[in-house]
Image (tube, rainbow, N blue to C red; front, side, top):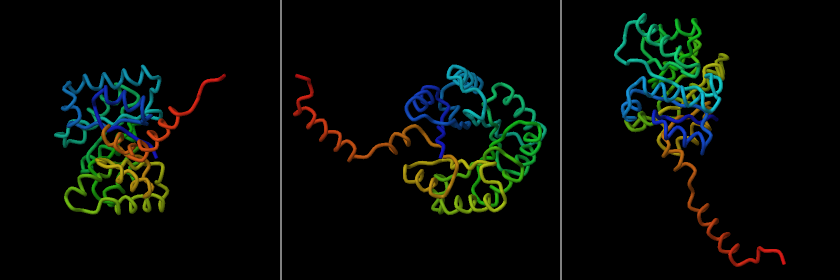
Length: 230
């Protein structure tokens, strides 16, 4: 399973890359706003980051960038998506799972602009991404659970459908809005390709009190042991 960071803050991205070896980044308008920078400043930061780390190309380190969510005209979506994609070879364009979004993703993929069909909340919606050769599909986990819905079962359904028709590993499944380490494990068990979550979730996911307990025990033993040569 691949780990993506859900953020637009370049300091968080650098920390996650250097500490956890994240495999990509997902952004959205909310993350851009929280960065405190303008849209294009964030994109420049991301483009410079991949150059500095010699990981240029979406095959090496995909970065999902969401277009203006107000756009509903297919031609306008295609135009802005093409413009943003041309800025950096790592950029994958996030498009909402709506009729106009699906139509635009079909055109963009035919043009070689890779897409991520996002705001997916059902297995039926996920089929559109695969049928249109989208690089990614982003079914949401946390938002569904917050509203009282079961959020993992439909990931199993998506995986099964993709395997039935040869879509699995062609359109990769990104479990989005992941909030806990338990959700990460459940997504991995379901067979999802990727999870994307915030930096703190990865930090919490790594922590276990018995690791600290064992480390303290071993440190105490080390301190009572002669460790120098005669």
